[in-house]
Structures are given as structure tokens and as C-alpha cells.
Image (cartoon, rainbow over all chains, first blue to last red; front, side):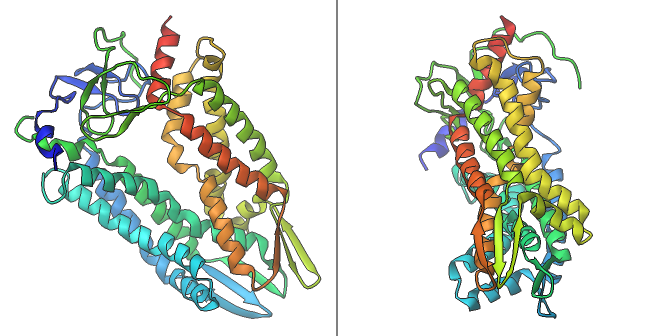
Length: 211
Length: 213
């Protein structure tokens, strides 16, 4: 990539003995603690970043397990009770012929969460090394992870809407299952994990010669 | 929180990319164009003509739509002779009926409380500046909070969730969207439009300049 060579000589705030605010971009002297413009806390590099990323990521992974094992939706129609897990719901939609919606739910509740676990773990592992994917590739991966994570909440909202709407006594009732709670937690934990990641670490790998 | 020090001298003309820490000299950016970081290509500034006023107006519009969206009937469900109307408020309380009160609170926060509070905070921080006045006290804190909570305001995701839910029950019953549904859809459009005018670095710079003079 054409930028690979150029990044070596980029003047960063840290190299200039300064510290930049990640909220508003304001530049301060190294010893400044709080940003003068926006009041955010300043740190040249967020040193505890990776620890927090891993902690929240594991919490998210653990919460994702019961989210798949327990029912998301408990439907009773004419006295018959049916319990649906996340994957079960996708299969049912698929058999009904609603392929588009089945695909949305599958992507939002299975592909995106698992993809996010892998992507965040990869970014955290590779943060300090200048290998495999160049800066721009990892930067894009990080942006995609940050942007897309919130969309996994779709399934939780679907359950909330169904449970609110389908309350027709004997004919049909829908109740949320315990998986709805653990899935919501899993999504929230991975979102926090991604937000704790300091993207400046990805770029530091290209100037490892000076610290 | 520690006190702010005196304004750092001599660093006004510099900007550090929030994503990769590369230093840049601030040059005037013509309205409608984008200034990108030369290393990681993150958009640093995209000033727009009259952006402040438009953002405040759109935030006010969104707040009004939000109130309509919460309390008017959202969807109506009909099976045989039975019919049931529910509002967004019902969707929020749905979890609490099944003994999942914390989830109920979380859903309320994500689709109603947070988006609404963010609109108020943005209007509060930018409103006086749109009129050419000095920023209100604590405007920086309000705007910082609004920026930090942006990923957690999930109104647009809720709308997609509604679409999925509708398909799931079409076999079971007839569903008609109520006025609140359209208010909510309009709310999402207005929010997207508002975000497209938002250039946070320009806002921060203006906030600082206006409060100093």
C-alpha cells in the first residue's frame, strides 16, 4: 500500500511531546490532565484500554451462551405453548418463506455478534504489531465493528414488540424468554468492549522504533 | 473531576486526529467540503452553511415527533373479532410484565429516554450559539454527554425491529400501523438528517471560541 511507507514519518501528537484530545481534537502540552476545550480526560495513550477490551469481550461472550441455549420467545396459541430460541426463530421464519426477514434476523443475531467477537479479539491481539493487515485495513475493521454492533439489538426489540402486541388471551400470547435478557447484555458488553478500544494503538505499531 | 487549567498557549492552530493521533495544522475548510486526516483518512471536519441553526431546528422537530411517537397508538392487531392497540409505551412495559424489569428499563432507556435526552442536550448546547449568543453554562458538558451516548440511542434500530415483528405475525393476524408508527419513522429520518449536519470538531471549536470572548 502506498501509505505504508509514509506512515513511518507522520508527526503524531505524542512524538511532538503533546497530547491530543480524542473527543474534540484539541492539542495540549503533555502534562495536561483535562481537555481545555471539551473537558474530557486526556491520555496520550489509553494504557488500560486493552485490558478493559478483553474483560468486556469475555463478559459479552459468556452472556451469548445462555442467549442461544434458552428460549427467546414463548408463544402460546390455543393453549399450545411453543418455545423458540434465536436459531429456532430463524429456521421457522425460513420455513414460512420469509427469507428476507430470516436473513435479517440471522445476520443481526448470529453473524454480527460472532463476527464482532472475532474482530475485536483480532484487533486486540494485533494492536501492538504491524503485521498481516495494514493500518487502513484494521482501521476499517474497527469502524465497521463500532458501527454495526448496535444493530444486533434488533432481536431484543422484536421480542419486546411481539410481547406488547400479541396479548389476545386464549387465542395467542407471546412472552419474552430469559434469552432476551442475556442477549441484550451480550450486545451491550461487546459495545462497551469496542468503545474501550483506543484506535491510536493500531497506528502506533508503525512507529514502534520510538516511544 | 480535576479543574481545567489555563488555556494552553500556542497550540490553537493544531489539531490531533482523534483516531490516529496525527498532528495537523488547522486550515480554513470551505463549507460543504471535507477535511480528512492525511494518515488514516478519518473525516476531521465537514462544516456546512448554517449547520448550527439546522441542527437545533431538526432536534426540536425530532423532540416533538418523539412525544407523539410514544403515546399515540403504534400498531393495531386484529384477529377475528379481537383487536389490540399498543403504543411504544406498551412495548417498554412488556418485559416488566414477565418479571424482567431491568430489561424493560434498558429498552425504555435505549429507544425513548436516551434519544430524547440527547435531543434536549444538543438543543441546549447549540441553541444559544445558533442565535449568535454565548454558549449556555455547562454547554460543553451537555454536548460531551450527547456525543458519548450516541451509540446507545437506538430509535432507528427499533424501527427495523418493528418491521421484522410485523412480518413474524402477518400469518397470525392483521396488523395496521398507527399514527405513532409514522411519527417514529419520520423521527428516524430527521435524526439521520441532523447527524449529517453535525461536525463535532467544528462545534467544539466554536464552543471554545464563543465562550472565551
